[in-house]
Length: 94
Image (tube, rainbow, N blue to C red; front, side, top):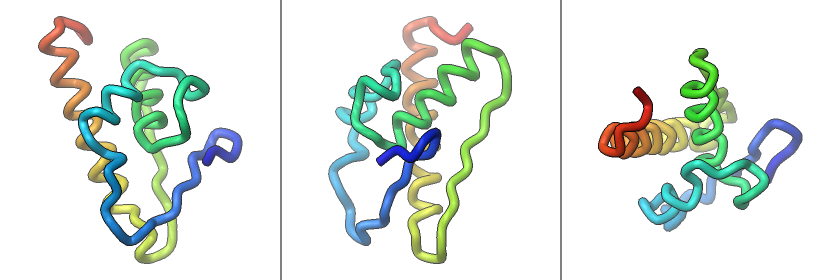
């Protein structure tokens, strides 16, 4: 869920089918208010702002030990890799 600018997530300690390519496409290019709260919504917003404003962006992934920081970071990197590769194929992001 969102709490102001923050996306709050809880580690379910199991794999969920919410990080598939289908889900990536669902969040790609969408505004935060157009889709349910998700790590990909935050990642897409940062990526879009970077391209639009030509400024560095950052994300803070924080939590206790075992909260899922490393796994969430991996998912963000996978999202950026997919979206950037798809943009290059389409001729975007030049």
